[in-house]
Image 1 (tube, rainbow, N blue to C red):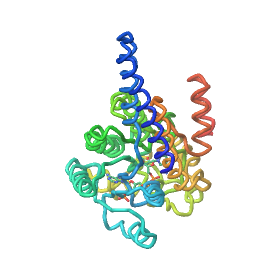
Image 2: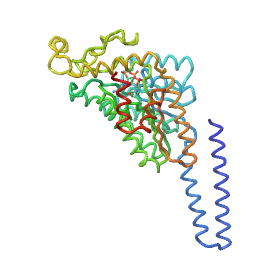
Image 3: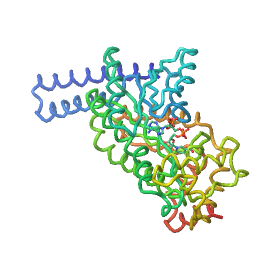
Image 4: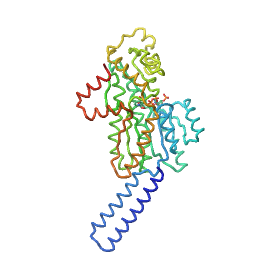
Length: 380
Ligand SMILES: NC(=O)c1ccc[n+]([C@@H]2O[C@H](COP(=O)([O-])OP(=O)(O)OC[C@H]3O[C@@H](n4cnc5c(N)ncnc54)[C@H](OP(=O)(O)O)[C@@H]3O)[C@@H](O)[C@H]2O)c1
């Protein structure tokens, strides 16, 4: 990629020189004022366009790098020469990425960041910016990846749990974006990659909380793109379908929702951990075990269980998180290319056959057709 950047900058410099010389000739030859004005505008446009282009992406910050998509994206970026700040909330989980980085001599630095907490995000960016200042670099790429899934029927979900789902999947991304924007605006370049989901453009049964956070992230990204484009900053949305990570193990279900039959689960996802996981999120007065004894099974068991019985087996043949990492890197490269041509800076990338199928359906079908399409695939 580096030679392309060098070539591009050379062409840009030569073109600017030619246009400036022409402007001088116009002025000397006393040509009409609008002629020199036109050329001056052209020069300014070129300067602006140059600002849209990252000379060479050197530095990236990635959230939720302990496992899964975040982990693989850190490794792929670093293997492509990008100095990568692998941020994670729990540094105990940093050993694997540190060992790989050491062994392969990769430019990875692990930083603590819990995206749910204002001060943790502020501290992490302060540390990164101080370090960058010493090295004389900025921050070229932010990947908002950290997230988890709260599933189950809306009526059964506690409002506090829904707030926590938004805290991480939406407000977490807003916190990091607000920290990085002053840096990217000053350098007049940057790419913000938001890891959304297939659930960012299709509503699925038993997923309303998770789906709302991802729809919100999509709306935020679409709007933000207009504000930051003049500063040379692009927004990219990555929309994976089902991906084989530990996401499924971390899914939270309401206490009254039965764990799905273990025969349907991929081997790495013990059914017992699923509803148990919800106890750590909803720390209300009643103990989880008491709730289990007295629980009334959800009125929506039919819909929830049918959906989960489609969702969990889909994990078995799902793409590896490396596939998502590859698309993230490609999206960054495409974004740079496009900015270089002065194109409009907003992109969506579905990842996986399921995501592409649903994206296509969303584009072509009426709301009614889409509703039946989703129901047939998830509830029958
Ligand atoms: N896997 C899928 O099927 C799929 C499909 C579409 C979209 N996605 C999206 O892809 C992203 C990554 O998911 P994944 O599949 O890689 O799942 P994963 O393997 O469960 O990884 C999730 C990562 O997010 C981190 N995280 C969660 N809450 C955090 C917080 N408050 N602060 C900092 N880090 C936090 C986790 O850290 P800990 O290790 O500390 O828990 C972990 O590193 C998520 O946004 C998810 O919604 C996943």
